[in-house]
Image 1 (cartoon, rainbow, N blue to C red):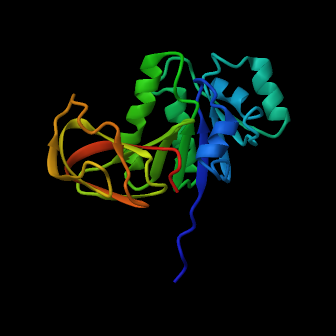
Image 2: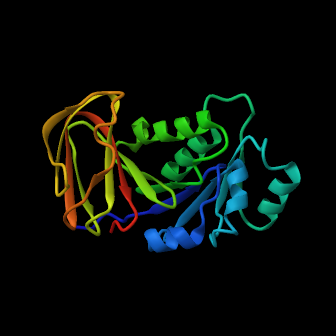
Length: 223
């Protein structure tokens, strides 16, 4: 039986660019990807982050036509969309990565600038097409992913790192082990911050969403 091939993609959104030195310190190996897709102006982040660029997707309201032509001349695939559309450029970039067969996706440069875009990007973790794909948002300090209802997540890394659990879309019943303040089928109420800033006490912490979805954020030092 053939083993499933893992295809990792990086998505460069158009927000603030993280310091690559801090990414290296907190998330070794973060550059490891076979596909790098930029959402419009996110293309400007590739070179400073030391990344190749394979595809740019968007309506090109941030990049100029000359920029797009230059990218195409350099062998980058350019996918143009109308300005009036029903998805953000970041969502289109995510879908392009999934269409290319990505099984793991990391979103970078998602914070800063317009808060509505940042919120929309966070919501992409719950995209229906991501239900069987590992999708995370990465910044200098934190890695965030969605844990869907009925699923469990094993987090490995250095004891002492921060682990935060936030209910998403309603109340959530959650258990957490390997943390300073364990949870045993505890109800995290939507809109509350009870699950913020827990602390790992072991090299493995396990989060279980018995009912309801949660966002799980872990600090640098995670494996």
